[in-house]
Length: 498
Image 1 (tube, rainbow, N blue to C red):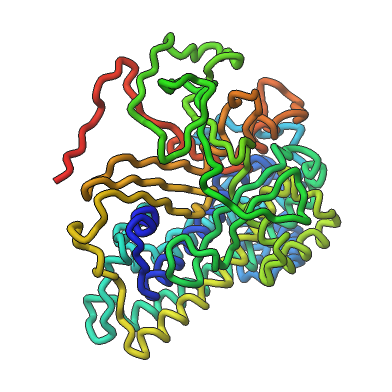
Image 2 (cartoon, rainbow, N blue to C red; image 1 turned 60 degrees about the vertical axis):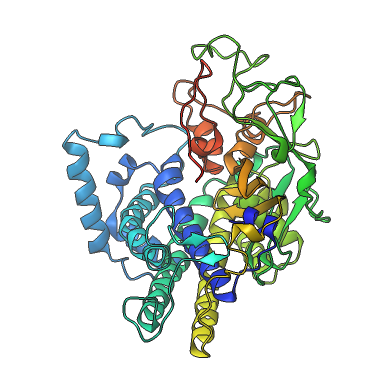
């Protein structure tokens, strides 16, 4: 949408901007919390070791770091009993192949039990707070109400079948529930667990370059620079200088990807000139053994000004911190102080994991502001939700092109579109995991994953828990990062443009 709005010069109404901010914001809060507990947490938490915990001591630990209501000895005893029955049944399900008892685990049994209890609580919590998506976007994931020019969501405070005061009140309650859990459970758990793994501030640094498109606009202009989380780039871990971002400096390489450009594999293409209909003519990808001197990935290699860049929560928090963001900087400083580490610790697996929690807290605390602004607009009679002034294709120029910047939970997401005769002539997107998971480029420069894994200690090669910690700290989504192609060049799908 932002790419098309940029191409056609569309400015969306204020209510549409606020609703988009709320949809994205609650997605950050839910997605990051799910990642910490359900996707990344068991890299640090030994679930089976929690069976050895003393529930009374677990209660003391929990109450020492938070006033969360579920912190009694009886509560943790109940969780432990459920876990014991689960383990003794011999049906560990998706946990059966985990590396329980691995020497890299450092948490005491009580900390493990506390984390497992909150893992279970987060399952229920996340399905409640994401109801904001259902109210504003009809479903989660993939909200259905986004529309070029605004949102397809009717606002009428006097009509129960549209968005009204009752739904505003429900969103306020859900936003409070979201913030309470983040403030009293997620962040305290993050700090408690991180305190046992400070050595991980020395691993997983990556490429040292960070790219942020910025998110949560404060005004309604396409690709505005007026953003709650600022746009910028940092090079060589230098926090004293935040560089402006120029989308013209973005290129994608396929030197080590299982794709080909007609111009040759050493060439880089800007997304406006990118292609997805190329045919791979090389040998069948050798999945049994990858030759990294040749092609070895389904992911392209995006580069900014010729450099590999990390994107995601760490990049966003670094750019905000270096920019002196009034909400971000004090939280980062507080976390660093509590952990007893300096800013250099941010450039690591531990820093990447901490940044995600910091961002979750900052965004969770911002949600009520956007809800309040939306309520104030409705109160004063501003019900506009969509700009239809340029909805008629006959009013468009014969040719136009635009780009749209977005910060998905996993990082910088860019869309580029070229429009000719009121139809899409070319469309490309470069998604977060393409940046982070990219293979080496024509210069041999490694992508963030590859670079971050260098020097990682592995206690048991057949149980590479340490490798998972760093890769999971990026929150991969490779389903987003790859292109679908047919090895024989056959048409996979055809979309009819009416």
